[in-house]
Length: 228
Image (cartoon, helix red, strand yellow):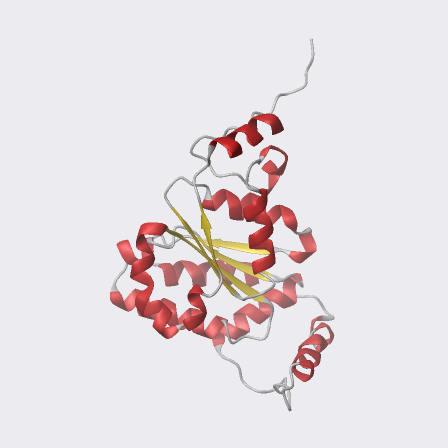
């Protein structure tokens, strides 16, 4: 009797993760587009109806395109407060020892500034904000680009207060200014796009790079079945 364990490709209500890349079919076009987008912008908006697989596209589809040394994903859900959840995640990610050669590895920052036409790079001794320092510590610990993934982002507007929303916008504006490689991916249900009006006013690049995840059609379903 064979002891080989079958791995079924259907996870029902559970999202696919990077470990499921061999059974994740039908989203090749979206994966390719999303992968290209993260090299074009530091802020990406992913939207679509409930149940279209936005979480799986991020956690499995996009994650599968990176080698482990090129991808440090920090997934953040609102919980009781999105800002508190965010700081808790980055605090935990930054704990522990940093690489001893960390400062030398940051030479590329000055090179990037020179290539982009900046007259001077920031002085290493110049004070930076507490948030920028936390992100810097994470980078020095892992030497991997940081991907901040805010899943079910609509919860900020369904459950959060105006003060919570305003504070979060301020966090995003600050993250976009840091010199470490940090990408922000927001996943939101399509019907809540209108709630992002004030957000876009404060952060105009919010909707410049966005991807709509559509429901599966018959051709996609056929592709999945053939893949199985």
